[in-house]
Structures are given as structure tokens and as C-alpha cells.
Image: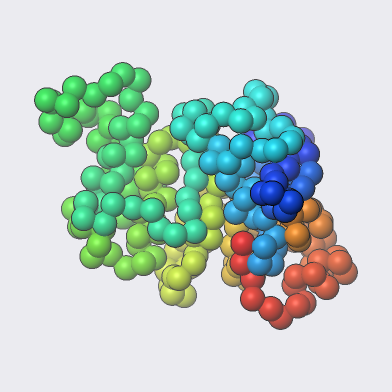
Length: 253
């Protein structure tokens, strides 16, 4: 069995008297698509924020490639190889698709940019941006302002921006949210391709998509892990059926 690339143990985050995450353990491996499920208030987005450094845990540890990164800020964890997307699309609408990706790629430069030098002169940055666009299939839209793209394409741009930072771990928070059927299929296919070379944690409410592509699923309820296992294990888990899959309710973070 491959060693975890990103691993959390006993991860807890309290907000006053509320534990949004309580003793959570999760392990992500390269080449494995790990889906995170749970009803409203389960703590899924809080967990991603803890893993990405957007939140500092109250207790517990986060290890990345065997290194303890607990409490490191988001920019430091990002530089160590973790990329993430957000529930709400996080892109620069007036800029072109290529400009968005180029800005993301610039964050990986080893030295400060010389701002008197034109951005297009940095060939390595431009190459990283073009490779990211090719990975998500948006090369033909490179010169289009992001504001002119469909919502699904904007979600793809956000993933491309993440890829331009050359991550080895991807934390994807509801990438299918608000997309149409055709756009959803394209993003699911993209995530499947990315899983071959990355460790991926996917938060998603499209149950058909999740069970079709996930290798491992973790289910959270009220800030704790209820169950973790293969899609078959989770489908057959009575506690999961009662708490989430069979409740017929609205799902969220």
C-alpha cells in the first residue's frame, strides 16, 4: 500500500463551544480519488480549510509528504504542493482565461518578479499557464475574458489556475456546483484524469458522479467521521444510509 501523501489525525476545530471538526482522521494517496460526503453542517468545508491552511486546528496534526505542517499558513502549504478550489468560483472575471492561469503560475516563481519587465517575457510562467489550460481543455478559450464564459467553464478555469501552481494534492470543494449536465460530465472526466497523477479530495453532492468515480469515500456527520471505505462499503453501511444517503434531504457543507 502506498504511503499517504496528505494525512490528518485527530483533527479538531472549535468555534466557541461548537466543534465543526472533531477528531477527524483522513489519508489521501497519489492516484486515488477520495470523496468526502455529508449533510449540511457536517464539517466538510471546515476540513478542507484545515488541510489547506486556511484554518488553524484546535487539536490534531496534518502531515504532508511525511512532514508535520500543522498550523502552517495557506500560502506555505500551497507552496509545498497543495492546490484547492472553493465552493464559490474564485477567478478574476475581467482578465482573460490565460491571464488568470498566468497569475497563478507566477506564484511559483523562485524570485520576485521585475515589474518593469513585461509579463509575457517570463516564458516558464507562460508555459505553465498553457499546460494548465491544455489539461482542462480550454486552450481555445485562452484569450476570452473569464466573464464571457459559462459557469462550468469558469469552474474549469479555477481548476486550471490550481494546476498552474504545479500541485501534487488537489482539494476540490464542490466543482460541479451550478453546472449543467454536459459541463458536469466534462468536469467529472477531468477529475478522473487528474486522479492518475495527484492525490485528490473531492467534496461533491452529485451522488451518481461520486459513486462512479471515487476510489474511497469518507462520510462526515456533525463534525465527526461516520464511515470510510470503498463505494460498495459506504452503500451498504446502515448508519450512512440513515444519516445521509437515505434521508432525502438537502445536502451541503
